Every structure is written in structure tokens, then in C-alpha cells.
Image: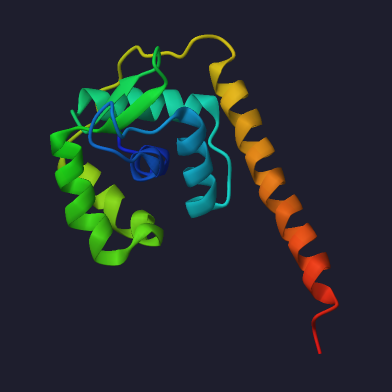
Length: 147
């Protein structure tokens, strides 16, 4: 059976930002953005497989040892050309066809240090909970001002 690009590959690609190590994103930021655009949390297996494929296709650079991920020049061009046309929430419509145009994905060995993914998910949950708590406090503070 021939390997094909998956929606998870496109999801991870669409959740990565930056152009280099100075403005790349962390794993927690990727998980948070992935959650915001697809209303779900990536699994570690989805992330690892997608990163390996995206690195092999020269679409992203991944440095798990420094917790930094960004689009390569090729990936940046694809991201700018297609994501900016339809906006962030169009990723499901525009990115999978572009990945398929690249040909078959190349699976490769790639991994994260043990516990890294779970730690990033926990950070994402803490961040999301802090936002909800602020919204709750803000809502209570302003509830007396409503007509």
C-alpha cells in the first residue's frame, strides 16, 4: 500500500509558525494552535509522524532539543501562498491538496525526548484554564454593570 499524506500532517504543518530559530514556536504553542484550529488535541503519534514527514519534505525545521519548530523556506512559501488566501481556518481545504502535489510522504525516524509531549499538553491545559479563569473573573466583575 502506498503511503499518503494525512489530515494530521496538514494539521501540524498549519499549526507551526516562524521562519527560523529566533521566531519559531514551541511544542506547547503548536498544540495550542492545533487545538484552536481543529478543536482537538493532537496525539503524540500524530505529531511525531507528521513532523518526520514534514522535515523529510523540507517543509519545516524541527529542533526538539531546543523546543523550536518553524517553516523552512519551502514550507514558508507554501504556507504564505495557500493559508493567506483563505485564512487560518481554511487549512483543511487548502493544505492537504498541496501536500499531495508533493508526491508520497517519506516516513522517517524522528522522536521526542520521553515526557516532552505530555508536558507540552499539560502546559496547554494550564494556559487554557488560565484564560477561562480570567474570562470568568472578568464576567463577574462586569455583571453588575449590565442594564
